[in-house]
Image (tube, rainbow, N blue to C red; front, side, top):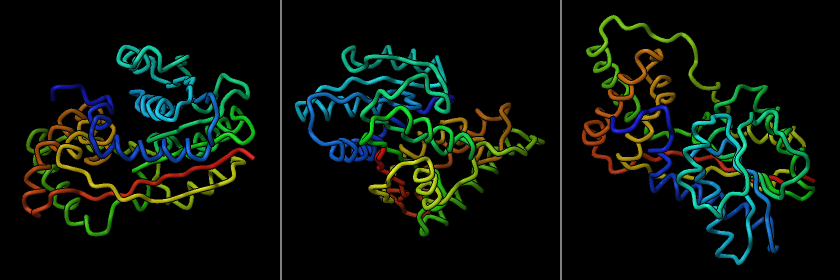
Length: 276
C-alpha cells in the first residue's frame, strides 16, 4: 500500500464519501437558519473533511464559521492542521468525545462517520456531551455507513464472494494465522436504535433518513486500506492487519468483474436533531 492503513484518509478522498458528507452539512446548515456567524464543533474530526465542507458551504451562504476540531488522536489532529486552510479552524483540541472540555459554546455539532466505533456506553455519553455543549436550538448532525441495515440486500452475493476470495488469499499469505476473537468494531445497531440514542440524550429528532450511495471500485479499495475495517472483515489480528488489508484490496476488482458490477450500493444513515 502506498499509505499506511491506520488512517481513514484514502476513503475520505473518494467522491461518494465527500458527496454524502456534503449533503449532511447542507442539511445541518439549512436547519440552523441564516445568521451572521456559526460556531461549529467537529467531533472525531479525523481528516477535517466536515469542517472543510462546512466552511465552504457557509462561505457560499455569506456566513462566517468558527470551527473547533476535536479528535482523540493527536497525530491525526496534527496531520489535519497541516493540510487544512489556515482560516478554516479556530481551535484544535485533543480529547475524548465522551468528555468534552467545553461549556455551552456551540451552535452546531457534527459527529460524522465515527459514532459507530464507540461502545454503547460511550455512544450515550458522547451524545449527552454534545447536547451539553450546544446552545438551545443548536443543531446536531450525525451519519454512519456502518450499522445494521447499511448493506443493501442485492449486494449479498458481492460481499460473500469478496470475503471468501480474500480469506483464501489471506490464508495463503499467512498459513496458520490466528483469527481474532475480539470484535474490531462496536456491535452494529439498527438505524432505529441510533434514533433512540439521540432522543434519549435529550435531543429532538428532526430528520432521520437512509441515503443510498454508490461506491466505485476505487472507494471499496480505499475503505479496505483502513486497518480497522480489514481486521473486522477478515477476523485478523493486529499482527496480520496489513496482510488482511492487502488481500481485500487485491480481490475487489475480480469480484466486481465476476458480478459485472460498476458500483456497490450502500446505505448511509443520517440524523439531524436539535437541542430543545
